[in-house]
Amino acid sequence: MSIDHLQIKQSTITDGKLQASNGDSKSNQPAELVHLDPWQKLKEYTDSRIALGRVGCSIPTKPLLKFQLDHAEAKDAVLQALDVDALMVDLSKCCNITLQELDIESVAKDSRENNKQEQADGLLQLFKVMSQAENKSDYLKRPDWGRLLSTDSATKLERFGNHKSYDVVIVMGDGLSARAIAENGPKLVAELIFLFKEEGWSIAPLVIATGSRVALGDEIAERLNAKMLVMLIGERPGLSSPDSLGIYYTWNAQSSSHDAMRNCISNIRTAGLPIRVAASRLLALMKKSHQLKLSGVELKDEQELPIVDQSQPAIKLL
Image 1 (cartoon, rainbow, N blue to C red):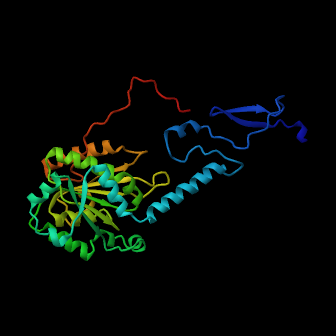
Image 2 (cartoon, rainbow, N blue to C red):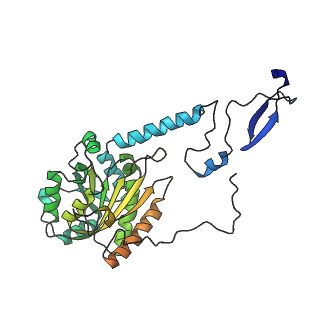
């Protein structure tokens, strides 16, 4: 059979729907180079890499370049060092408060009452500490070092926390995304400080930790004698979320604490969980934790969040 007797069909996409047209159509419109996917409309509701379309047997250039960009941003998020000085400036602006970096020699003997008075007068005391992972290479190769305070940092915190106690301590750790802390941390800290003061809780000096893993917060809370630990840390970046911040909450954190003793609120970022919603969820958890004197798998997040109005007509995705 010669090709002249074959009926060739061309597939085109119109408004996300697959249509077929005969090759002998009188309209001499050229076939589209990029073949879209019937699931194209789903892309409005997710950042997942779906319905990319195709060109021959490959994906189109645009989604390929987008993948390469997202991969580069995720890699940069992991390797980027936390700019602590810039973070302190943003903290001061967001909290509308003066930061006082602690000189351990001059304030180690201050009483708890003096600390509370200084905070009431518009000062927020702050510690800068680091883990035993002194650089990114060590941090990535030795996760265990990121869970332990450096000798100098441990000594400073222990001396300062001697004969003191606090209701809550907030720790800001770079984790696997310094970008997440830099972009979301200051606003979240400002929100949390406001809520904690409303509850009448005493707040320990803010701690900025570099080279940090989640468990580093346990050692910090233990040395500052804080009953409640709020660890803010940059999460492992995904290919669409290099700026995701996580909160890990622990009641009576100790160096021997383990993951089952923590509660986690994740994906806090502009395109994810809003900061105010995250802060509200955390406060509800902490109030319940304060009553039960526990955290982790035995503490459930029971806060009710707004749901989709069921009276509205369903969205037809396909």
